[in-house]
Image 1: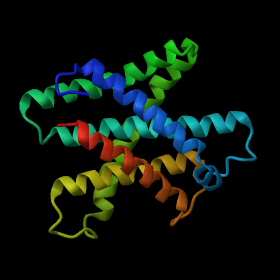
Image 2: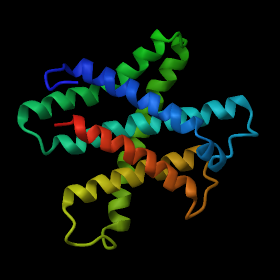
Image 3: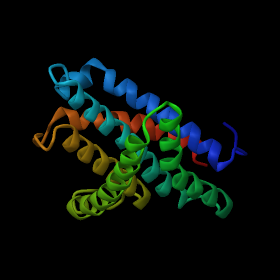
Image 4: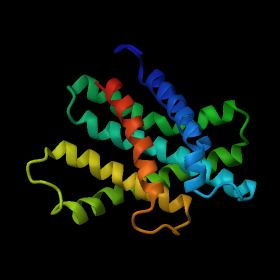
Length: 190
């Protein structure tokens, strides 16, 4: 992917790459064990798969928004467009895959709901953790941490239907995969 790709091309690339990575996370044996997926009915497995997918998509949007604050005006505008196009690109791709309109509309709503929820979570993380983080940490590093923490905890709580406890290893697993996603995005958002 070069610096001259359009916002549509970037959104398409990021959506498909994120969906592929989320699929690998869901199919990982360790994740399956942590999320207790093995004995669940298919509808519940599908719900968990969807939560992993939406966590990745929303984290991309949050991460790009945070990173673009540090770009020049032209690049920042491009990445703002990418963020705006990610939900529609994802839903369009689902339609191309043959997913019924009714379910595509649900996905669109779910992305919006989780985006709002995780954005609120960032503010909650900031309030809860500001005193615990070193004063000498750069503000942009703190912001990345708050976003990562918000999506990892929120995703874990949705996956477990709120039945997780502090120290749940599923949170660490969510943070690990989101960090891998973040590292990949950091190479692109410039």
